[in-house]
Image (tube, rainbow, N blue to C red; front, top):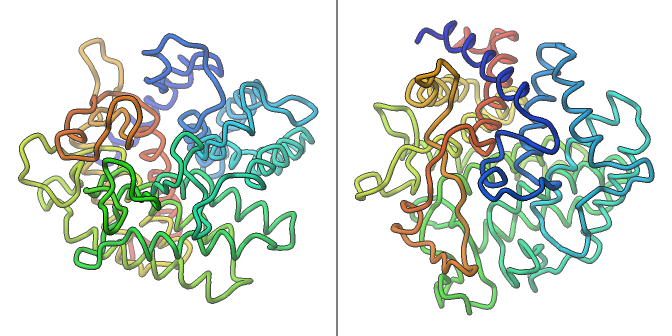
Length: 389
């Protein structure tokens, strides 16, 4: 497809997803669809609503804002409580949807969104932490830090502290990134391991480092997005910390680009194991990296040359995985449904584990990052940045 054809198909795809989804029945939440259970406040829907709000900000088309407002309003009550959300679950994934409350409050002025921010922020006051100070990923995963969790919690935490608490917790948020760099970064490759167990007791954890054994692509993508989003939320008031997050972003970008597949312009499910049997080019992680690179350029965290790389990754994904099915309906494939560590399924972080998880179509863990990358590239096009490279 040409770039123009890809953009038209994306527009059709977004409308198709919206027309077949509401807060109780989101077609993009494949885990929930397969479970047959009632939908709940969750990060998957939260990511999709983030993408739609970004589409509104870049296009000005009211339908995106109205859909997002209706969707989130279904869960948020007038007193700021949130249906199906429980502070005591202590799950960082449930912080992520609250990032949308800032934009919705700014755009609609609905006071219940402001109150709901306080509800979610209260979880962080008593969230269990490692001895080094990082939030546990979930209460059911004691002593564990996952890269995913930085994206789920830190942009909200930083934004809330800057807006409403005179930056009181901003250094705490920043130090959690420093700990991840200290304990989870591999010096040889510059990549970050998926998880870290402070206790070294989990079967997947290295007894010396506490780290899981492999570099899972989507976790790395979440982390890159966390770096750029949290730096944006922080702003320049804390200059050293602000610059450090940008430096971490650039260093990780440069390390990752050593593993970019030169033909597809995508990344593999396990980043550094291209030739391993069962490894595959994966959509969601590649899209998150495209998003982080483009946004990094827009915010002047990264040199302009990274915009071109972001664009190549974006169109690499759409060329391989965006198409229409036999019924003429748009679809996006190549999305790892879910991957984690531990749990009742004995998820050990091995290559066979990551390669064996289901690969699906139209799940928002891939769709939302692709749309987020798209909005950032549209913004760069409007500014003439891509044409300057």
